[in-house]
Structures are given as structure tokens and as C-alpha cells.
Image (cartoon, rainbow, N blue to C red):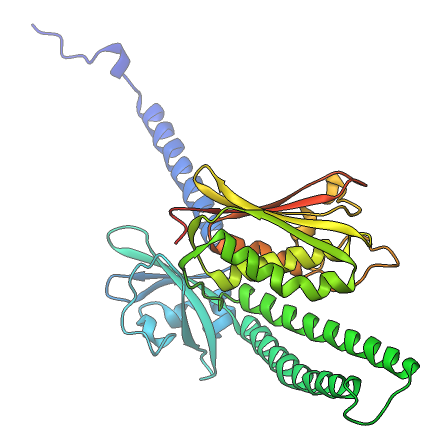
Length: 363
């Protein structure tokens, strides 16, 4: 007679089987609770929809945003909340849509759709009303700076220039010096306004780079030519040593970067000193160097000075002050070219600001 008993390893009493089932059920319940806590506790509205675009579940933030109770939304089509959307498809980037509350009020929302499984999608929702309000304030500020400040400042500068040329009659030496100081202050204000507008354009992503072939000698010569006035006023000699290498860049923007670095070097250099501009090929990149004989940059600030509104402590005789946007703008313009910018310096021994632009893959 054969032995029908199962092996010892498979022998389990009813009580043991029951305990095992309860243990597994507890583990599954804990996992579900943990998953639910993670999904529903995230600081975004969460909508769970099926492939027919019907709502399966919502979290607390969706209730707050849309003013519906969960049982009012379950089974409803998601277009109830987003009337302009006919279909929700998984997307790699968030999209901005119009959302509608139970009261009929609409608000801007940013949504991301992610596939959970073959039957369900997750829709993450963020109310961006405040972001839109801040963007409107930013645009109003830029319009005010551009129109209400730059336009009258340009008119004031023109008037001062004409006065200095004697268009309004003869002027004493004391009057001429006063006009010169006023014109210098006006130029500074215009420069600050332009920097503010440029910085905001870069941060908003509105800046476009137009890549064309140019040469190191052409860009350096243009930058030095534009900086001669500042050098003469600061009693600084400008010297340069460059090769004539071809590279791909937005010439206007690279010239802008070099002008900023040169005028910065002039600002921090003692009278009767030299600012030198070097440029040439170094491996697979073009490198520009602007070297001065100024106060130098402390080691702990050699990265920070490229941040917005960061400046070194300026000597009382500093030739021209600003608000600390110039180097931040340079950094963003260089990064737009897939390049890098840095400073090599030792306190009391001058600084060399370096810009490297790759010859390839900088599109």
C-alpha cells in the first residue's frame, strides 16, 4: 500500500496555513497603505483615470483645487475638470491647460500624465495661478524698466551730450565737469537697465543664439575697439595677442562677453597699468583670456562672482560701479555656446578671466 502522506516540508496544519495567509494579507495591506500614503501625500493634485478617461480616484489636493468630493468625481470623465482636453496621453513634459472648478471658475494648471499600468494613468496637477501672477508682474516690471526708465534716460544722455558740445551756449570749466559727471551717471543707469533687461531675457529663455562662423581676431578686435573709451578714461593701456582661428559662435554675444570682461578689468585696475587680451586654439576649443593687474579675486569668491548680484568689495576709487549682473550674463551667454567661463587669480596679483568655446558640438 503506497504512502499518500506529503513530505514533511509540505505538511502545514490549518492553523499554520491560516496564520500564513493572514501574514501575507497584512504585508499586502501594509504595502498598499504605504503606496497610497506616498501617492496621495505628494504635494500635487493626483487624478487616477482609466483608459476610457474616467476618474477612478483623487487625492485631497484635487478636492481642494476643484471643490468636488471624491464620490462626485468617481466615474466622471476627466474632461469635467479640463474642458479643453479631449484625451489624456502620457507625456514627457508637463503641459499647461485650463482647469475648471465645480463653481465654474477656471484657473491655469500644469499637468503631467504618467502610465501606471495597462488600465490606469496618473494625472499630476499643479495650480500655477501664483506663477502666472508673478510672470505678469515680471512682464510689467520689464515694460516699466524698458519704457519708463530707458527712454527718458536716453533723452537725458542726449541732452547732456549736446550741452557738453556747447549747443546751449558757453559753459564754465566747473559746469563742464558737472555735465561730465552727470553724463557718466546717466551712462551707468542705462547700463544697469540694459543689464536687468538682458538678465531677465536670459532667465526667461527668450534669448536666442545665432551661430555663424567668425574668428578669434575679429571678435577680439571688435571688443577692444568698443572698450577704448573706457580704457582712456581709466588711464589703462589695452594690449592683445591673438591668432586668427575660425570657430562657430554668435559673434555679437561673444563680443558682448569680451567687452564686459575687458571693462571689468579696467574698472578694477590701477591707473597706468595694462589689460591684456589673449585668444587662440587650445585643443578642441578656442580660449579667450582677459588679464589685468588689479586687486585680484579671493579664492572663496572665484565661483560666487558669476552669480547674479554678486560683486567684489570695490575700492573707493573704483571707476565704475554696477549691480553685479555683468558676469552672470557672461556665464549664461557662454553656457549657451556649450562653453565655460572661470577666473584664475591671486589676491593682490591681478586676475585672468577665461572663456572657452568648443569648436564642435556647440550648436
